[in-house]
Length: 266
Image 1 (cartoon, one colour):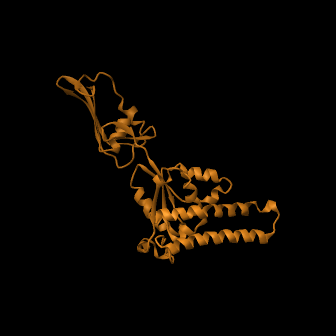
Image 2 (tube, rainbow, N blue to C red):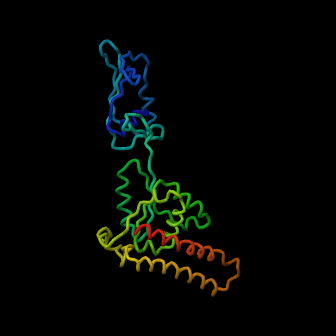
Image 3 (cartoon, one colour):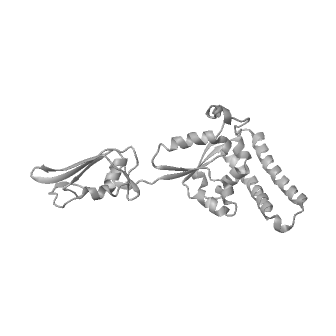
Protein backbone atom coordinates (compact mmCIF):
# COMPACT_ATOMS: atom_id res chain seq x y z
CA UNK A 1 0.00 0.00 0.00
CA UNK A 2 2.94 2.35 0.65
CA UNK A 3 4.29 1.75 -2.87
CA UNK A 4 0.85 2.21 -4.40
CA UNK A 5 0.62 5.53 -2.51
CA UNK A 6 4.11 6.55 -3.63
CA UNK A 7 3.57 5.75 -7.32
CA UNK A 8 0.16 7.43 -7.23
CA UNK A 9 1.69 10.61 -5.80
CA UNK A 10 4.64 10.64 -8.16
CA UNK A 11 4.37 9.70 -11.85
CA UNK A 12 2.69 6.32 -11.67
CA UNK A 13 4.59 3.06 -11.99
CA UNK A 14 4.60 -0.72 -11.89
CA UNK A 15 5.13 -3.23 -9.11
CA UNK A 16 6.19 -6.72 -10.20
CA UNK A 17 6.08 -9.51 -7.62
CA UNK A 18 8.43 -12.41 -8.23
CA UNK A 19 11.57 -10.38 -8.92
CA UNK A 20 14.46 -10.31 -6.46
CA UNK A 21 16.53 -7.13 -6.35
CA UNK A 22 19.78 -7.28 -4.34
CA UNK A 23 20.73 -3.73 -5.31
CA UNK A 24 22.90 -4.81 -8.23
CA UNK A 25 21.11 -7.61 -10.07
CA UNK A 26 17.49 -8.43 -10.85
CA UNK A 27 16.71 -12.15 -10.62
CA UNK A 28 13.47 -13.72 -11.83
CA UNK A 29 11.80 -15.97 -9.30
CA UNK A 30 8.38 -17.54 -9.11
CA UNK A 31 5.71 -15.56 -7.30
CA UNK A 32 4.73 -18.29 -4.85
CA UNK A 33 2.94 -16.45 -2.07
CA UNK A 34 -0.70 -15.58 -2.32
CA UNK A 35 -1.20 -11.83 -2.49
CA UNK A 36 -4.37 -10.10 -1.35
CA UNK A 37 -4.45 -6.82 -3.22
CA UNK A 38 -7.75 -5.83 -1.59
CA UNK A 39 -6.07 -5.72 1.82
CA UNK A 40 -3.44 -3.32 0.50
CA UNK A 41 -6.04 -1.12 -1.18
CA UNK A 42 -8.09 -1.03 2.03
CA UNK A 43 -5.22 0.83 3.73
CA UNK A 44 -5.50 3.72 1.27
CA UNK A 45 -7.59 6.82 1.90
CA UNK A 46 -9.14 6.95 -1.59
CA UNK A 47 -9.83 4.63 -4.49
CA UNK A 48 -6.94 4.52 -6.97
CA UNK A 49 -6.80 3.47 -10.60
CA UNK A 50 -4.76 0.28 -10.95
CA UNK A 51 -4.51 -2.75 -13.20
CA UNK A 52 -3.25 -6.08 -11.91
CA UNK A 53 -2.99 -9.74 -12.93
CA UNK A 54 -0.78 -12.80 -12.83
CA UNK A 55 1.31 -13.57 -15.90
CA UNK A 56 3.90 -16.11 -17.06
CA UNK A 57 7.33 -14.99 -18.17
CA UNK A 58 9.87 -17.52 -19.46
CA UNK A 59 8.27 -20.25 -17.36
CA UNK A 60 8.03 -18.15 -14.22
CA UNK A 61 4.79 -17.10 -12.53
CA UNK A 62 4.82 -13.36 -11.84
CA UNK A 63 2.28 -10.79 -10.74
CA UNK A 64 2.08 -7.14 -11.73
CA UNK A 65 0.27 -4.08 -10.45
CA UNK A 66 0.22 -1.03 -12.72
CA UNK A 67 -0.56 2.27 -10.96
CA UNK A 68 -1.60 5.56 -12.58
CA UNK A 69 -0.64 8.96 -11.27
CA UNK A 70 -3.44 10.29 -9.06
CA UNK A 71 -4.94 13.77 -9.20
CA UNK A 72 -5.56 13.52 -5.43
CA UNK A 73 -3.14 12.86 -2.60
CA UNK A 74 -3.04 9.14 -1.81
CA UNK A 75 -2.21 8.11 1.76
CA UNK A 76 -1.39 4.72 3.21
CA UNK A 77 -2.70 4.46 6.77
CA UNK A 78 -2.88 8.26 6.90
CA UNK A 79 0.62 8.93 5.53
CA UNK A 80 1.36 10.02 1.93
CA UNK A 81 4.43 8.50 0.27
CA UNK A 82 6.50 9.41 -2.81
CA UNK A 83 9.36 7.95 -4.81
CA UNK A 84 12.30 10.33 -4.31
CA UNK A 85 14.97 11.30 -6.87
CA UNK A 86 17.03 8.25 -5.85
CA UNK A 87 14.14 5.93 -6.63
CA UNK A 88 13.52 5.23 -2.95
CA UNK A 89 10.21 5.01 -1.12
CA UNK A 90 9.92 7.88 1.35
CA UNK A 91 7.26 9.72 3.32
CA UNK A 92 5.97 12.94 1.79
CA UNK A 93 6.54 15.59 4.44
CA UNK A 94 4.04 18.40 4.26
CA UNK A 95 5.42 21.87 4.87
CA UNK A 96 3.23 24.00 7.09
CA UNK A 97 2.85 27.71 6.36
CA UNK A 98 1.32 30.37 8.58
CA UNK A 99 -0.10 33.35 6.72
CA UNK A 100 0.33 36.58 8.70
CA UNK A 101 -1.61 39.57 7.38
CA UNK A 102 -4.02 42.37 8.19
CA UNK A 103 -7.62 41.59 7.38
CA UNK A 104 -7.70 44.69 5.19
CA UNK A 105 -5.32 42.81 2.89
CA UNK A 106 -7.43 39.65 2.76
CA UNK A 107 -7.59 39.82 -1.06
CA UNK A 108 -3.83 39.31 -1.24
CA UNK A 109 -4.00 36.53 1.34
CA UNK A 110 -6.69 34.78 -0.74
CA UNK A 111 -4.46 34.83 -3.83
CA UNK A 112 -1.49 33.41 -1.93
CA UNK A 113 -3.58 30.72 -0.29
CA UNK A 114 -5.14 29.69 -3.62
CA UNK A 115 -1.72 29.34 -5.23
CA UNK A 116 -0.22 27.39 -2.33
CA UNK A 117 -3.17 25.01 -2.25
CA UNK A 118 -2.11 23.80 -5.70
CA UNK A 119 0.76 21.99 -3.93
CA UNK A 120 -0.22 18.83 -2.10
CA UNK A 121 2.81 18.97 0.21
CA UNK A 122 1.93 22.41 1.64
CA UNK A 123 -0.55 23.03 4.42
CA UNK A 124 -1.69 26.64 5.05
CA UNK A 125 -2.97 28.22 8.28
CA UNK A 126 -4.49 31.68 8.48
CA UNK A 127 -6.98 33.84 10.38
CA UNK A 128 -5.83 32.79 13.85
CA UNK A 129 -6.77 35.86 15.87
CA UNK A 130 -4.65 36.81 18.81
CA UNK A 131 -7.80 37.65 20.81
CA UNK A 132 -8.60 33.93 20.86
CA UNK A 133 -5.56 33.49 23.10
CA UNK A 134 -5.94 36.57 25.31
CA UNK A 135 -5.44 34.43 28.40
CA UNK A 136 -2.90 32.10 26.84
CA UNK A 137 -0.42 33.94 24.63
CA UNK A 138 2.22 31.18 24.95
CA UNK A 139 -0.28 28.76 23.37
CA UNK A 140 -0.88 31.21 20.53
CA UNK A 141 2.84 31.62 19.81
CA UNK A 142 3.41 27.86 19.95
CA UNK A 143 0.67 27.49 17.35
CA UNK A 144 2.57 29.72 14.94
CA UNK A 145 6.05 28.47 15.87
CA UNK A 146 5.01 24.92 15.00
CA UNK A 147 4.82 25.98 11.34
CA UNK A 148 7.78 25.52 8.99
CA UNK A 149 7.38 28.95 7.39
CA UNK A 150 5.64 32.26 8.01
CA UNK A 151 4.51 34.44 5.12
CA UNK A 152 4.03 38.09 6.07
CA UNK A 153 1.99 40.36 3.81
CA UNK A 154 3.56 43.66 4.81
CA UNK A 155 1.28 46.62 4.06
CA UNK A 156 0.76 49.96 5.80
CA UNK A 157 -2.17 48.45 7.70
CA UNK A 158 0.01 45.50 8.76
CA UNK A 159 2.67 47.83 10.14
CA UNK A 160 0.07 49.91 11.95
CA UNK A 161 -1.59 46.84 13.51
CA UNK A 162 -0.56 46.13 17.09
CA UNK A 163 -1.62 42.48 16.83
CA UNK A 164 0.20 41.87 13.53
CA UNK A 165 3.40 43.48 14.79
CA UNK A 166 3.20 41.63 18.10
CA UNK A 167 2.77 38.40 16.16
CA UNK A 168 5.82 38.95 13.98
CA UNK A 169 8.11 40.46 16.63
CA UNK A 170 7.44 37.54 18.98
CA UNK A 171 8.46 35.17 16.19
CA UNK A 172 11.67 37.17 15.72
CA UNK A 173 12.81 35.75 19.07
CA UNK A 174 13.36 32.35 17.41
CA UNK A 175 17.00 31.75 16.43
CA UNK A 176 16.10 30.49 12.95
CA UNK A 177 13.48 33.13 12.25
CA UNK A 178 15.21 34.57 9.17
CA UNK A 179 15.30 31.13 7.56
CA UNK A 180 11.55 30.70 8.07
CA UNK A 181 10.30 34.16 7.12
CA UNK A 182 8.90 34.74 3.63
CA UNK A 183 7.52 38.19 3.01
CA UNK A 184 5.72 40.32 0.47
CA UNK A 185 6.20 44.07 0.75
CA UNK A 186 3.03 45.53 -0.71
CA UNK A 187 3.68 48.27 -3.27
CA UNK A 188 1.56 50.69 -5.30
CA UNK A 189 1.49 48.26 -8.24
CA UNK A 190 -0.36 45.71 -6.12
CA UNK A 191 -3.56 47.78 -6.19
CA UNK A 192 -4.79 45.60 -9.08
CA UNK A 193 -5.06 42.62 -6.72
CA UNK A 194 -7.59 44.31 -4.45
CA UNK A 195 -11.29 44.23 -5.25
CA UNK A 196 -12.85 47.67 -5.66
CA UNK A 197 -14.70 47.33 -2.36
CA UNK A 198 -11.53 46.47 -0.42
CA UNK A 199 -9.13 49.10 -1.73
CA UNK A 200 -8.01 51.59 0.90
CA UNK A 201 -5.86 54.71 0.79
CA UNK A 202 -2.11 54.49 1.27
CA UNK A 203 -2.11 50.68 1.51
CA UNK A 204 1.49 50.31 0.29
CA UNK A 205 4.13 49.66 2.95
CA UNK A 206 6.61 52.30 1.76
CA UNK A 207 9.42 50.66 3.73
CA UNK A 208 12.16 51.96 1.47
CA UNK A 209 11.53 55.51 2.69
CA UNK A 210 13.19 56.35 6.00
CA UNK A 211 10.48 58.89 6.87
CA UNK A 212 7.78 56.25 6.48
CA UNK A 213 9.65 53.81 8.71
CA UNK A 214 10.05 56.53 11.30
CA UNK A 215 6.34 57.32 11.15
CA UNK A 216 5.42 53.69 11.81
CA UNK A 217 7.59 53.67 14.94
CA UNK A 218 6.19 57.05 15.92
CA UNK A 219 2.66 55.61 15.64
CA UNK A 220 3.49 52.64 17.90
CA UNK A 221 5.12 54.94 20.43
CA UNK A 222 2.07 57.25 20.42
CA UNK A 223 -0.24 54.30 21.02
CA UNK A 224 1.94 53.22 23.93
CA UNK A 225 1.97 56.76 25.42
CA UNK A 226 -1.78 57.15 24.92
CA UNK A 227 -2.57 53.88 26.75
CA UNK A 228 -0.26 54.90 29.60
CA UNK A 229 -1.97 58.27 29.96
CA UNK A 230 -5.44 56.74 29.83
CA UNK A 231 -4.49 54.30 32.58
CA UNK A 232 -3.35 57.22 34.74
CA UNK A 233 -6.47 59.27 33.96
CA UNK A 234 -8.79 56.35 34.70
CA UNK A 235 -7.55 56.20 38.30
CA UNK A 236 -8.98 52.69 38.64
CA UNK A 237 -8.21 50.27 41.49
CA UNK A 238 -5.15 48.13 40.81
CA UNK A 239 -7.13 44.91 40.38
CA UNK A 240 -9.10 46.53 37.52
CA UNK A 241 -5.98 47.62 35.64
CA UNK A 242 -4.44 44.22 34.93
CA UNK A 243 -5.84 43.85 31.42
CA UNK A 244 -4.88 47.40 30.40
CA UNK A 245 -1.38 47.17 31.83
CA UNK A 246 -0.90 43.90 29.96
CA UNK A 247 -1.95 45.58 26.70
CA UNK A 248 0.44 48.47 27.32
CA UNK A 249 3.31 46.07 27.93
CA UNK A 250 2.48 44.33 24.68
CA UNK A 251 2.65 47.59 22.74
CA UNK A 252 5.85 48.68 24.46
CA UNK A 253 7.48 45.32 23.73
CA UNK A 254 7.08 45.62 19.95
CA UNK A 255 8.46 49.13 19.34
CA UNK A 256 12.17 48.28 19.08
CA UNK A 257 11.69 44.86 17.38
CA UNK A 258 9.34 46.50 14.85
CA UNK A 259 12.11 48.92 13.92
CA UNK A 260 14.54 46.00 13.47
CA UNK A 261 11.95 44.11 11.41
CA UNK A 262 11.48 47.03 9.01
CA UNK A 263 15.23 47.55 8.78
CA UNK A 264 15.66 43.89 7.78
CA UNK A 265 12.95 44.09 5.12
CA UNK A 266 14.07 47.37 3.54
